[in-house]
Amino acid sequence: MGLFDLFRSSPQTVRVDTPVGAAPLRVSAAGKPWSLWSDGLGTFAIRSLQVMIVAAITAAVIIGIQQITVVTIPLVLALIFASAFAPVMTWLRARGVPSIVATLLALFAILLLLGAVSWLIVWAVRDQWDELYSRAQQGFDDLMAWVGTLPFDIDQGQIDEWVATLTDFVTSAQFGSGALAGVGAVANFVTGLVLMVVMLFFFLKDGPQMWAFVLRPFRGEQYDRAVRIGDKTVSTLGSYVRGTATVAAVDALGILVGLLILQVPLAIPLAVLVFLLAFIPIVGATVAGILAALVALVANGWVIALIVVGVVVLVNQLEGNFLQPFLMGRTMKLHAFVVLIALTIGTVLSGIIGAVLAVPIAAVAWGIVQVWDGPDLPARWARPKHREVEREVQRELQRELQRENG
Image (cartoon, rainbow, N blue to C red; front, side, top):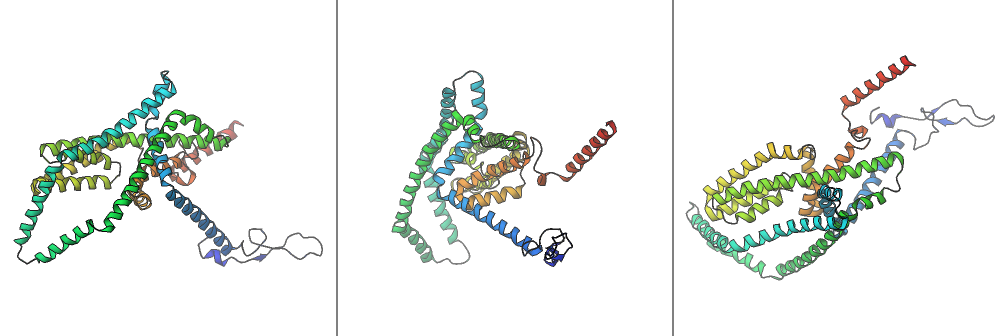
């Protein structure tokens, strides 16, 4: 039945048995009592209303999450870190290490890694900032000298006006209010970091018990499905973090070697930035390559900058074609279009942190669909058609065998 066929359906009077003296009951062609809500247009209106209610609930949930990001973001990050270190916790507990000791060891390792990355960036930038600043100033002067050699005239007064406008903005009250907003953002960051550490401690220590408590209301098939969803979520998040971290480390090491050979300043912080941006698929590698090329352009000239671009492209090709498929396998088997849409939605909703979390959340959602009806049985609407046909043929053969044996 087409869409417009829904609106052509009309009530029909069908002969039904009714008590003596009662008026005949008008029913639809399907045999149900007819009303304005049971014809084609009514069915379409009910479905539209249902869609609007679901959309309104989804929007309300998203808006609510945005209002309490200081809680939701640390919660998601703590869950991701706990999933990544779940095999470590299992290994330690299997060897008789007390739960509190294993938790403290894993938590200390996570904080040590985060602290080392932060310290490395600060140390390298502070150590080479003066050199980069002087080369940037020299590069700007060279650019102005090159502009003066162009065959057409550029008003020097206009350039001076732009520089003065930028200077006025930096010294204005608007810039000061932005600085105050930055102080507030730092306070929220510290609060979220402390909250994430506390949540991570409890996830590592009591994660299985907490999940068992959440599963108490479920029974039967719903309980089995909830268990599969929990296991799939933890395995997907853990595999994603471990695989992406390994790929990012190899990328950062390759680009670091290239930058050191070419004697590009800030090689270490740029390599660390490559490692961090690798957690944003598609976009992260591009941004890291642009930043590395810009630093090389300012400090070493356009020839070295082009070589840096070549190094970045080579490393990214090796990662995408060999390393990532080998390490991550089917964990992140999402179409590039889905990844791009997830990145866009995550960036719009929560900025950079949303871009980082969008892809693993999308992977978890798809993983849940894949185990909805069984350990290796996706939801019915997501099953490939040929597999459905094969299973139907197998069921028909089994029925034939049962009838023959019976």
